[in-house]
Length: 179
Image (cartoon, rainbow, N blue to C red; front, side):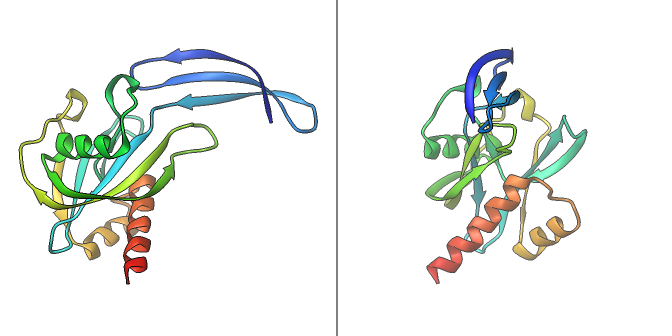
């Protein structure tokens, strides 16, 4: 597919929406709408005993509160090093600081409509501190969950965030590779 032209139709501090004129391989023309958002970091904070730290917040587009792993982008669509962004998001949302961050892999949010990609990290050797939440995160809650409890939350629909579930799969593959 070839891009013939592009125009921005909407922008704010978190994203832009553009409409591209395209030419398909058969020569026909069409349009493609794309949501451009900066890359994000998702962090699986894991305690020495294997419990994982999740956050719960109101997700406006769904009109629901959802449990998920800490994750986010830099303000004003700033481009940060993925590990630096991960440490920042972990600190902001949970107050935790990681002595060790291991990158688990790359995730594409919704490649059929968005350019956004993310990196998943495992955070260990954790120390606690106060969260530094943004205004949009003021109603956020945080809690520790064991693996069996987390997996049950996925099965019962309490965790539906695709990135959190995919990151957990990356964690399982990482652990399997370690032996």
